[in-house]
Image (cartoon, rainbow, N blue to C red; front, top):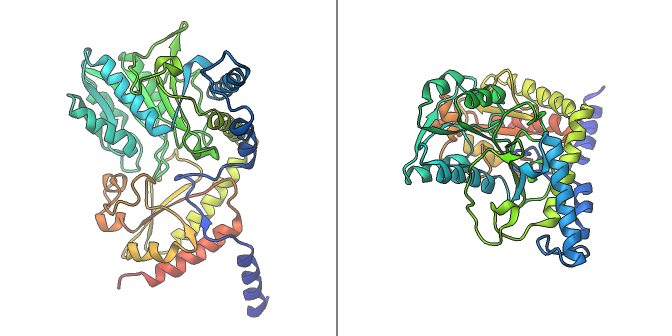
Length: 402
């Protein structure tokens, strides 16, 4: 192939791409068309209040909510009564952590977590420290995974809760959730896991894993924003988690969460879970992993690149890389018109301070700020990965600190 032909082929391929290329699916995902279609009737036609079941409108809304609850619970290996709806994972995390602490602090005030949790968890725990909570923030192992031995050593008779995310939102490491859950159970301690990034990417089975509290969100799996969920384990028909509501009024969701239910969002959430489960079964997620590996291998050809979170167990779509001797801010500025990526958690990426996850792994502030998180999605193509690699190589050369 001549140079001119190669350049023409490259130009044609790039012309077919939609810019900026979206590689930030850990921040949020586009709403799937099938999800949108499932939601539409509940905005204008079946618009009833699910709590007002005396009329047909309210009854239809209630029925839609309960069908959605059943679908999501079934996907998780849970019973419908175990699952309540919230406005998202941040609210779910607050309800789980604050609710348990305020209901159980007469038994003890000690909580164990990891230092690289999502800000929604860490900020809540720091707030509870003002109410007397004593929190152990465990540092990760060098590969970013959770330190089980450190957790065992941290447990005291006063420990009432262990909260560890299922998979890290920045570096993609998957934590040994089953092991943590069984150890917590042996000590009579409640175990909570934020599964926001894991849902739809890994098989979650609450039938076999004794997680007491699990949180998740719809917008990370091609569902709508503003809706999430909280799983509370039951045993012999009774809830094993003693928890206090944090939003009162109305008595919705077993009295744990006041407010009118977001029926369209809940219906969309269930449809998104259905589609995500189908992808897990048909191997579509494996194709995403192959593209992630291609991106990662290509980036590692650059001498100044290191991959963060290279644990044995990690999410199939996440690649977190740092660029040594690089002007990180300039690099991100030059990339933003071509590629949508992130420097870390979407909830704090506007914060100029370095990622707490990366500094916990031992990265300097400068290296942490020269770090990019790529997170691929179901619509990511090989052509997009090829373009992203070429663009990053080009920008990396321009921003190298000599």
